[in-house]
Length: 482
Picture 1: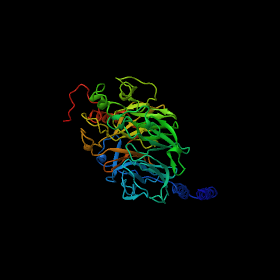
Picture 2 (picture 1 turned 180 degrees about the vertical axis):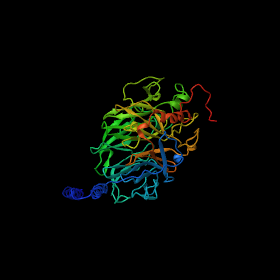
Picture 3 (picture 1 turned 45 degrees about the vertical axis):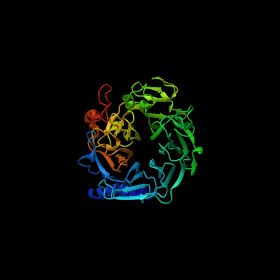
Picture 4 (picture 1 turned 90 degrees about the vertical axis):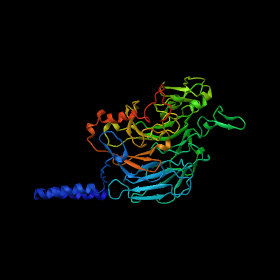
């Protein structure tokens, strides 16, 4: 930068001293030289052409998409670097090289370099996180949070991964280690519960639900760690929040310096309490919860669940809820979301490429339900929630659809893709990963952002009539998937 300033100073000095004797052509030449000198240190990005079919996606008017890659492999989260390189976390249960790096070398928007890396043991299919923070690539297996230093000129980070946090629990359900950073040295790590409602097996008696739930001691919560300290165990961290069954989507919102997450609600209300909850209620209850988290918050798992129709937190039937009964002892979500849609990533948009209404709003990747039978499975989209005055508008918009590839999803296996990860590129593009084959999309806005309004959302609103997006009719005889 000092050399750049020196060059500019010399050029301007020459311009001032010789202005009178130079013709207009030479003046323009020198001005152009100043402009080019300034541009040499700035990365420019070429906005590529989108696919004619938007990579199979349906998007609001003015948006387009292209497939960056078709088959990276079963993936979880992804991160896009300042130079456009993409890093993806693979879900592998053995071996090493659980990460993959992608690079586009000819600016057509499609990756033409794919390189596997990761000198660490893979330890389970819930290996999830991939984030870039303060020049480091942070990623997680099921039991360990790692990081590696990124180098501007290299695709693959140097050296062996540093171990940041170690989980002492065994491989179990809901073991994703998702991360968020508060930009003050704090790193937030999810330690989800391995059960539905803290049930434990008792020999000769079957399952029981103990009170108090022992899993709340060191699971079902979020812990805060030092992002720069090596080899931390859970006991080295500070429990930040509790009563959280399963959190995969977590993010720090810079506008209000707060931690947000989207919570997976419990299952099996009808199976566990058929005297109180019908098969229909089992499909539409409880809400997935969009939550803002303050230190010390308790969100009530396993003793309660959130009803998105009543807008109330209800007592769980296994813990004294003999019929629907409200409880006010726990923190409510900032917004209730459709049941069982499995929100697996959360991104607050910061860029300037998209229309202004998307700025600071929340994108959520819904992985899709697995257990709404006899009703169709639901979710399988990327949604957008606008924010106004720092709060969600209580309106969920369909932003990207078409992942499932079918109109009625009887079983999860019927869906072609399941959206999983979100990342914002340096030019403001939105990247989406999916967990089945490892296809990656890049969403681009191609129209005049000042002319974007409700009219451009009409077609996406109509998509809510599909069986995997609408609330099934409670009174209709539609319990068979024909």
